[in-house]
Length: 336
Length: 302
Image (cartoon, rainbow over all chains, first blue to last red; front, top):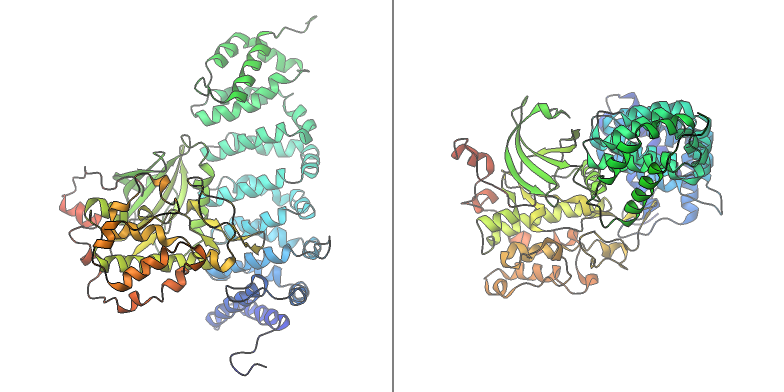
């Protein structure tokens, strides 16, 4: 023990002290203030072990390994997340920093925390419902996006019923929470290409019926973001099957044609990138071809005057010229 | 505690205070109807913003996750039509740049400078301890409240030092407006030596105000001759010298700067509002102008 100053607590002691403090915070007994203080103090101790401070390096791997083991055995990660709303403002962020650091821990090619969370998926579900609560939404978002980096965890989230709550979270009235939820939502749908493609294929109807609501949202930002993401999803070659299905539905084409005429130029522009996929399809189903033929002249005229001020955007102009040519050359299928 | 609704009808717009974000955002003076509190509402027209949309988002999310009396707070942020609206407390003296250009063309009085930079260092020290560097410290990003409290704003260029679950040893991403930020290759502790150098000459003397915001952090922001000619205390000259040290490694951190003797010998005989006279806070001017409010109060960046 050092002669001066406090002796340093080991991982086991800090985890035990933190767990006791969180438990008494949860109970909300009369010592709540003291419990709050203890939670904050011990969280900082753990954070400093992992990250170091301006004066001290992070703890050696062996100490961090012990700390991680104690966190798993005590089930403290879940307990912290369940009680996140009771922890003070800075403490909430410390929880997220500790969680994210522990999550990234690796032993060779293994990620022990990821394996641990796979056995405790309630951690993920609790984090996802965090978007329901203003005061912890952004903290939960930080942790969720870190989780979404791991395919195994992204899969659990995508295939859970709770995933569909995101369609609500991305539209809440508080802008920062809606934006944060959208980042997480996008990460889940785009990060792991094969996982995402499989998921969208298997759940096409459910996902796209929900997605339709976002595209028709009253909220300008939601509408624009979701339209942009739709374009990205359809143009990703991994999602070929999903794309083919999407561009075979005449209702989807009608929606995009209406969006091309929206007042907002940004929405028009994003809609263009979805619309072009319908036109470029070499095997257009009859209902799609019929709509395009019915509007052939109007579309050509419209596209000729569409965003003519984007002179320096070469790719856009090439694509637009290609679409005009394609539409001009459309002919009814013989025999119909 | 007052609840600020995420709905534009809960506020009554009074006048335009200024423009920012390259003209794509307008700052309004407004009244929160249910509480009567005066607020500033910044409206970003998202349909006009092309590349910068993520900066708006980032600034709002980051600001909401910070709590310090010397950092700007947002009451709420919501979408209204194509606008993202950010409601914040009214900073009645506007920014330091407004003060310099409107009332203190030869620079602020020393006592005022010391009071303001102390607040700035306090806010910056908190920001650094939370793992962010600001990267856009400038007079237009230092706002002063009616009570004389300085708040840092402009967090859209802020950059996290903690990435991927680790403190970064160096930062290689640069703010969009400027490619010469001297942070690359610095160690963790030294990185905290945020460039406070920009703000000090600005507060000392408005003649060093860059003509173009984008030029500001060119890395060679020297104190102009006018400043040398003005009589400041030895301590303040020394403090400015420390911040302007050519070698980034030799510059002190915001936390270290707070222990500088200039803040100890500084006598708090007068409050900042007293020191800033004849400048008046906005609410007093509203009363003075008997409610008729046509003047443009802020220059541009708020």
